[in-house]
Image: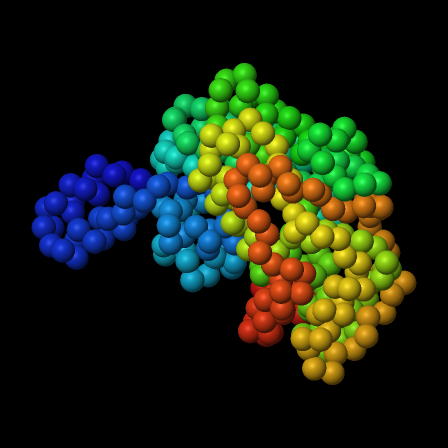
Length: 345
C-alpha cells in the first residue's frame, strides 16, 4: 500500500468524500492488525471480531477460498503470500507494518492433512519467516496460536507447566513452534505470546470436525453418525477465543514470553453435545454410535486449565456449552442451503 500516494491524491481531491476514502484506505487512524490464515475457521472469526476496532490486514495464499470472508472483504486489506515463502512474507509485513500480529496459519490440524514435510514447512519454517519479517519493524504484540495437541495424552487437566508429550507429528511441530516463540520472546525481549486453544467450535468451522458433522446431519434431517457417546472433550466457543485474543492484545506486557491455555473450562461427553444440539432441531433423529472410527488422538482427559490466562488478563469464557451450541445451531439454520454432507461452501 502506497500511503504517501494515497494521501497526496486525497489532498488534491480536497473533498470530504475524498478525505473519507483516504481515511478508509489508510485505516482511519486505527491500530493495524495482521492475521495469517485469515481465511480459515479461527482466522475468519478473528477478522470479523476485530474489523470494527482495528485496521485489519490478512495474509493468504493465492487461490485461497475466501468464502468465509464474504461481507467483510471490502473493509480489510488482503496480502497474497505463502507462509513458507520468506520473501513473500517479508513483503507483506513491509507493506502492512502491523502493530499487532496474530498467527493462525497452520497445517496438520485435520485428519486429512498428513504430509509431514508440509507440516514442517508451514508450522516451523513459516513461523520462522513471519517472526524474522516482524522483527524488522517495531510491534506491540505478536500472538502465536497453539494447540492442546502439544501436550499429548494426559490423565488430568492440562496445565502450562506439564511436560509436553505430543503423540502426533502435528503436535510435535506445534510444540516446537511454541517453544521457539517463547525462546525468541525471552532472549530478544519481544512481546510474543502463545495461546493454546482446545477444541474450538462455532460458525465457519471446517467440515469433518465433530460439531460440523453433528450440525450438518441435523440440518439435513439425518442421524449423526459418531464413534462413542462417552468420549470427553473440553469445548471452547469461538467467540470466547476471539475475546481471549483481544485480551492478549490489550495486555502485551502481561502476556509477553508466556504460554497460556484457552478453554471453555468444562469437560463434556459427545452424547451431551448431541443432546444439546438435538433439542434445537425439531424432529431430529437420534445419533447412531459405533459407526464412525474413533480418532487416534482421543484422550483420557481433553480439558485445559485456563486459570493462568484468566488471572493475567481478567478474561473469562462467557459461553456454556449449551449457549455456544445454540448460537452455532442458529448460524447453521440461517445458512442451511450452504451445507451438505457432500460439500461445504
